[in-house]
Length: 133
Ligand code: SF4
Ligand code: SF4
Image 1 (cartoon, protein in one colour):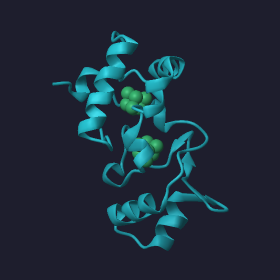
Image 2 (cartoon, helix red, strand yellow; image 1 turned 30 degrees about the vertical axis):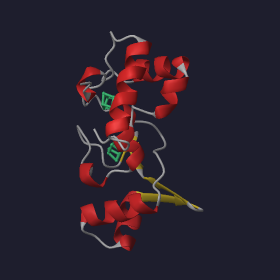
Image 3 (tube, helix red, strand yellow; image 1 turned 90 degrees about the vertical axis):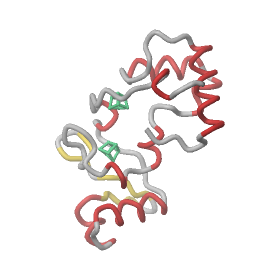
Image 4 (cartoon, helix red, strand yellow; image 1 turned 120 degrees about the vertical axis):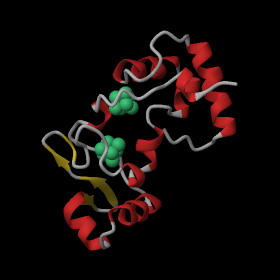
């Protein structure tokens, strides 16, 4: 049976947590993060979120997500897009997207063919629709 480690093992390189923006948090993400941090919504918003209109993102500190410190310090409360990364379903129909993501994420099996990658990811998603690494 296909296993996640056949296509991906996070190296904790931190690349995906760096940059000047972060993923946005939906309502479920916001609640999960508040619970994980054990703070009030207002405290979390004040300390950790960048709110632009209806868009809630995490603050950036020193060029990376405020929660990054040699790894994710809010692992249980991280947004679903962080949990899903880099196994985005869009790679299944777009080999160029697969190549782009593979180049930016050393955790993806660098030796695997696109065909095998798609087969295994499809099998895993059938078993576990919301992948959490
Ligand atoms: S929440 Fe965690 S996994 Fe997501 S960008 Fe921030 S540090 Fe990285
Ligand atoms: S998901 Fe990929 S880019 Fe992000 S820390 Fe893991 S190996 Fe690095």
